[in-house]
Image 1: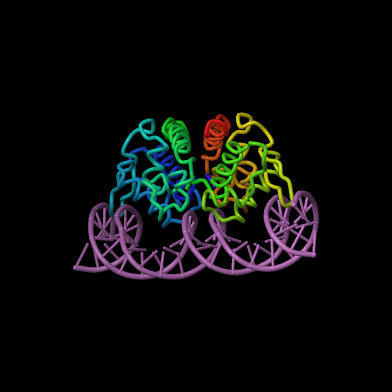
Image 2 (image 1 turned 90 degrees about the vertical axis):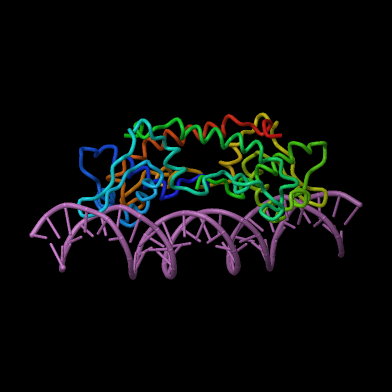
Length: 135
Length: 135
DNA sequence: TGATATACGACTATTTTAGTCCTATTTAAT
DNA sequence: ATTAAATAGGACTAAAATAGTCGTATATCA
C-alpha cells in the first residue's frame, strides 16, 4: 500500500552512488551491489534501465561500468521512478481508459477523478525532488 | 508500486456513499456493495474498520447499518487510510527503527532520511484532502 | 422465532514483487 | 588469440502481499 518497490529503492541508491562517485571512472554494478549489500543482478538490471532512459550512460567491457548522464540537479526522483516502474499509478484504472472489463465498478465509482488530482500532487512531490537533494 | 490497495479504494467509496446518503437511515454493507458491484463481505469489513476508528457509527440488527460519525469536511483521506492500512509507509524501514535483521543494507543506505521527508509530503496530500472534497 | 443486519476470525486464491539462472556480447589486458 | 570482467537481457522461480471467501456468533426488528 503506497510503498516504494525495491526496484525503485535500488534505483535511488544506485543513482545516488553514481552522483557521489563521478571522479572519472565508471562505477560497476558489482561495486554498487557490494557497497549496499544488494543482489548484484538486481542492481545490474536497474542500471540497465537507467541507461535506457538516458539517466545513466554505460560502457561495456573489462573497464566498463556506469556514469550519470546528467547533473544530479537535472535528474528528478520522478524521472527515476518513471524509468524503473511501468505501473506507477495510484489505481490501475488510471493507466488507460477503464472498461467494464478492466474495472467492474466504473459505473458507480465516482472516485477516479478526485484520485487523479491526488495523483498529480504526489507526482509533484517526486518531480520537485532532484537527485541532488538526496545526496 | 505506490498503488492504493482495494481496501483503501473501497473505504473511500464507502465513506463517500455514507456522506451522500445521510438522510436519516442507515446504509448497509450490502447496499453499498451492490451499488458499486463490490464483494459484500469486503465492504462489510472495511465498514467495520471505519467504525472502530470512529469514522463511522454502526447499528446492528434488521434495520441496522452505518452512518458517518463526523461531517465530511472533518474527515480526511489520511484518516481513512490510516484506519484501513496497517502498513502505510513508503518503505518498511520507516515503521520502526531498522535493524541489521530487518534491513540488510542499513549501513550503506543513505536514502532513508530523504525518503522520510517525502513521506511527510505525501501524507500531507491526504491530510489536506477531506472527504467533502471528493463528493 | 425468523429474517436481516453487524462482527470477526480463519482460511484460500491470486497477483505482484523480488530474486535467481543462464547465455550472449563487448572490451581491456596478457 | 585468449582470458577475464564487464554490460545486456530473457526466462524462470520463490516469496510475500493482496484480494477475496467461508463460517459462525451476536444483535435487533417484525
